[in-house]
Amino acid sequence: MTDYAVEFIGMTKKFGDSIILNDLNFGIARGKITTILGFSGAGKTTLMKHILGLVMPTEGDVIVLNQKVNDLSEYDLREFRRNFGMVFQYAALFDFLNSYENVAFPLREFTKMNEDEIREKVMGLLDSVGIAKDAAVKLPSELSGGMRKRVGLARGLALDPHIMLYDEPTSGLDPITTHTVYDLMRDTHRKNEHRGFTSIIISHDIHATLKYSDYIVFMEKGRVVEHLDVETFKKSENPVIRRFLEL
Amino acid sequence: MNVRAAVENKIIGLGDSVLILLNGLGDFTNFTVKTIYWTFKPPFRFKLLFDQLYFMGNKSLFIIFLTSIFTGAVFAFQIYLGFKAINADSFIGPIVTIAMAKELAPVLSGLVVAGRCGAAMAAQIGSMKVTEQIDALEVMGINSYQYLAVPRILGAMLAMPLLSGIFLLIGYYGSWLIGVKVIQIDEILYTQKISDFMRLGMVAEGLIKATVFGYLIGIIGTYQGFKVTGGAEGVGRGTNMAVVWGMITVLVVDFFLTSFLAKIL
Image 1 (spheres, rainbow over the protein chains, first blue to last red):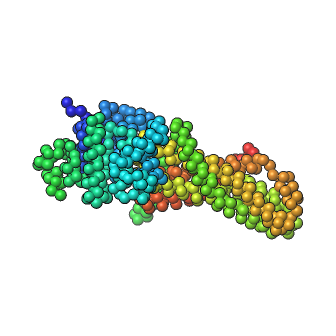
Image 2: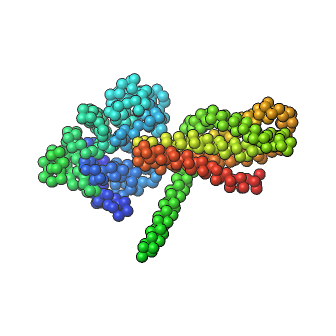
Image 3: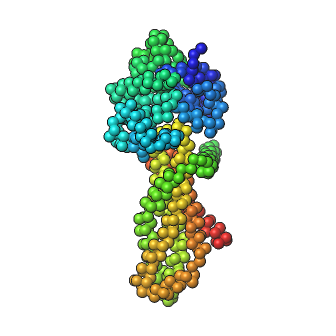
């Protein structure tokens, strides 16, 4: 029996009369890198919001780390979200804090660590994502797109999450920086793999997805078209996937 | 047939406008209730509150100083021009001081704070919204209303009576400069008249008004920030709405508050 970090059971989401996600039944393997792939408007971001409990399903259940998300109270949801780290499309660093303070932010909010412990942890995280000491004091507006993503990743990792979510993490980056960021994501995953660390990436970058993922969930119009390991995915005969692969 | 169609269109348009208005009111009420709820829920973020108090209070001092000293001075001069004809220019002191305590200090401070801080609140929160920073807070399990709106609203509520009090003191000094040093009214007579007419309730009225205006400026500024959609254009629109609605609300609520406070003070 597969060990799932996230599981969707008969999950449908409607906004008014529009069906955004339609009867989803699949699980995301614990300890693996899974990419949710699809065209714009396929429902990828809405799916991710269900994992975080930011949006609730109209029908069915979302089970994350063995907890039924749609049964959690508002208070429990806030606690529950500490299981996640997230890297946003444009990093979403707090623009009033420098890089160091951005990474320290969740530690100050949710732990009782003293300043020395925070410093040690933050500098370690920044070092692990390749941010030099002098960049730690820079504001997000003074960082390049790639550096912002790195700081975002360090912030996401600060509370040692069980699941790391990446929402189109390489949007707006050049191809070389894109691969550097993906390398970093993979290295981060490998370093934390022993504790069942799960990475979920939302993307429409087919080449990076094939190179870095363990599993691929391909979505179209709110449905899962295929959910396969990478090697099987490459051989898929599904015409929509073939079109995507031939890009 | 054309007339009927035109009337139908008018009625539909009117209905749509009413629905938009009701929707907006519902949205604003929902926001207000949430901010009140989160004000009383721990953790209490005193550092953020002091940061806002510093920004709204301390950083507004210079503009309050300029506004109040010239308001006091010009008001005193205008009263003098009118009252000297009936030989009542010794009443400049009480008239200016009472007007400032009850009306000018809270209202003009309110307009200054709405322009300066209401706009800043909407711009800061709005730009955080369009750059997903508010989503980042929520994903971390931090309530964005509690983190962003509550300290700003409370900061405005605390800063406004302080600024209004400072406005009154500096405005009084401006009127004193004109009345005593320029027009040469006897200083003892000038201050004696003020103490004859001035009551503590008048100062209290101004401070109560200032606190209410602070709350309104805070709630409108933060609401407009959270309501921002789109990119930079949306932030600009939200900022503009925060200033316009903040100022209008201060002026309109002042009228009703004056009527209410006149009965109880």
